[in-house]
Amino acid sequence: MVTQVQSQVSNMGRTPGTSDESRGQVSATKEEFLLLLVTQLQHQDPLNPMEAREFTAQLAQFSLLEQALQTNEYLKALSLYEASANNARAVNLLGKEIVAKGDQVFLGEDGKAILHFRLAQEASATNIYVYDSTGRIVRVIETGALPAGDNSVTWDGRDNSGGPLPPGAYTVEVKAKDIKGQEISVEQYLRGKASSVSFKEGATSLLVEGIPVPLGSILEVHG
Image 1 (cartoon, helix red, strand yellow):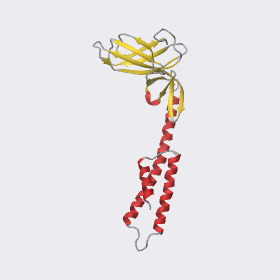
Image 2: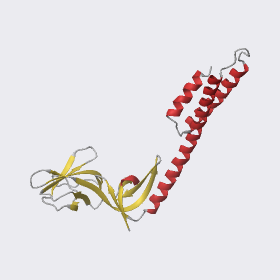
Image 3: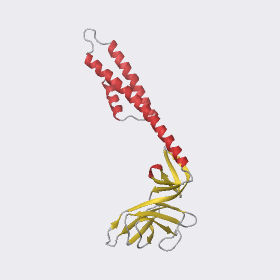
Image 4: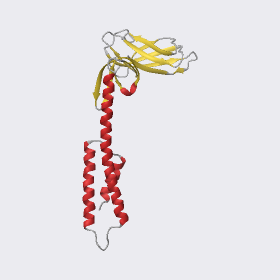
């Protein structure tokens, strides 16, 4: 009689949720389990009562259900606490200079953007590819030899034909080779002041030089 409820409890024990819907399902299953268990006890044959082992197994299922319900509540509280802590940290970063992982750059109204990247070793040839929102290459910048470490290149906001491109976000890809023509490891990043904070769909991000930056992408904070 309790087989269906036991199956539901086992499923919830594997994948507990934190939404109102999942908590409602757990509560409903708990009530169903108790009702079925009491009904079974009331209608059992006095001459052939439920075996102690079976009764113990059903009580264990009920304990598992209780744990699933408590776990859901703990997960919800933990999620709210983490979101609140992230929001507080993000607000404290406003106005500070942020260095974050990223391959995007925002071209402003002034028609200029600074591209930042770090070379693992000295490069004899470096090419920078700029893509628009459709994934099309709009500009290739050949910088030649560059030293190992941090490098910055200013993009004039023009395409390969020399025409000005509209303001907005662009994707940047940096490729570098050593004197032997071997690929060099490149780490691209974004650098600038955090101007605002965004809270969307449970995620917190900073706006740095016009580009949304998740807190997990931040490498350094200055100022």
